[in-house]
Image (cartoon, rainbow, N blue to C red; front, top):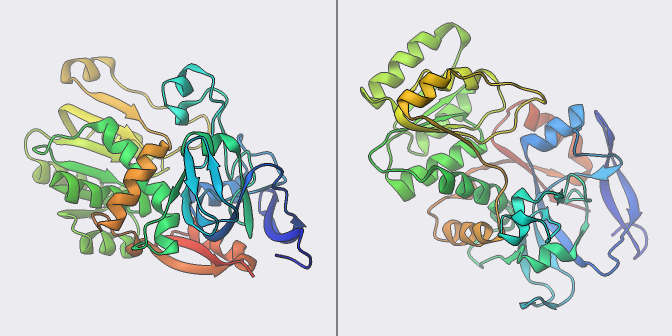
Length: 355
């Protein structure tokens, strides 16, 4: 902790481009206290750091992709987890009473709060876990075969599993993933290992494109405004006369929204996986949707059951999360970690030193 037993070090976000490490009180109240081992920096964190976000009211501690150790026994709501157990976290703090919560769709809660957005998160030595997370089974013990870094990435893996569940892929259909970042490459591993699919990656960062190739992408394309026609033709050559059967938009670049309509075929599914700039609109020809039987979906976050499944998949190395971490920082270097992330350097940056 900080200088006394009631304080801790935390990166406090106070507004756009304003984040600093400070000593603050540890406020656990009746919540479960988690000692943070690793907290990853995702693109959402970097966008909030630079521009703020409608869901975020400073001052607050960001960070929602985390792993840590429970500081006392957790024995309630049918859950038994001993003190010191390593766990991964589902960051959803649902209301538990709305129709979506009653249906187990806690990620769609009508009054949803989230660790690292509306509730203090993991860029700190400790994080208090609200009781709602315990009640939905949102802390998952980490198998011995996973490192703390891999455990922190179980949450983004669970989000990709949610995407996969919505798409209900068919093995015979070629897949195109637009986006060469960590989420695109996790999708790549899932489609290759679980579905045996032929997968193309469309990206913009040479090092990430090389990584996609090394991870088993069948083809990779470097997206540039000047070569869109060429890429569309090459994807057509890859996918065949029916076009891509599944397309995932795993980038926040709005250009992907128009681009995707040019590469999918009849009876295809498009999933908008990544968040876009606020107010971003997406126009579609209604007859194109209708006559070609196109499905456009979105997916957001995941559920505790998906986090449990992510732990199994990662432990069995169906998805190798160790390949996703590229940069490691101390808490005091939080701004460097943010800048690394927003500059598309490497893949995932993590905070793994908190003292």
